[in-house]
Length: 259
Picture (cartoon, rainbow, N blue to C red):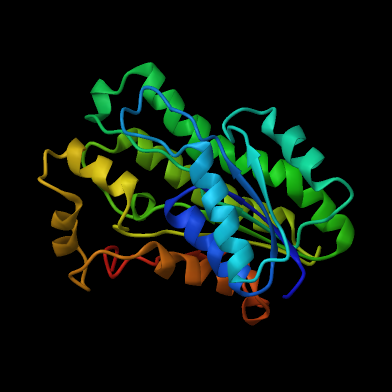
């Protein structure tokens, strides 16, 4: 896949940054998108522009021919034009929707602004990336769309009703997208990670009043946390030639959490 172009959202840290580095190591060129700004009412720290810049440098070092930084909020519909402008006349061979945010409350206690944030970033962000990239892929007759959802889309988790609703909708959206893409040469698949080390999982520990994110390791059959690179490996596979026969699939890369 050397020389092909991928757009990755949520690229400034965590799974998004790991996915970018994974693709870079395969020789992909990259457009890296992240808001790099607070996301109220989520109250944990978000990445900064310098974090996105550091990922871009890592990607070039890893083998990417280019790694362009785009600071934009995927939850804002205007991001579609921002991504189209960044692409110019180039057609991405892959679009990877990773950007996400988490908060937690009992289902009947979720404030409106919190529910809206979960939908805006976690669901609309996926839609906006598809809107920006998929039409050109269809015209080219090939492409890979990959979205990162969550194990919360596959099993009941307390205090995550809004987050689970958004992530469950991502699964349904991507499967329906795959149906709409039938016969076009473009595939659409979704990954559902389990407890993956990083800022979002640390914020989840706060939701449950746990001492730290390591506590979540006991839930998975592997009895450990996943690393972002393990999810990124699945992203890389779905974007590569070995996954040519897969579309509309839901991959639980979750250490057995949903088994």
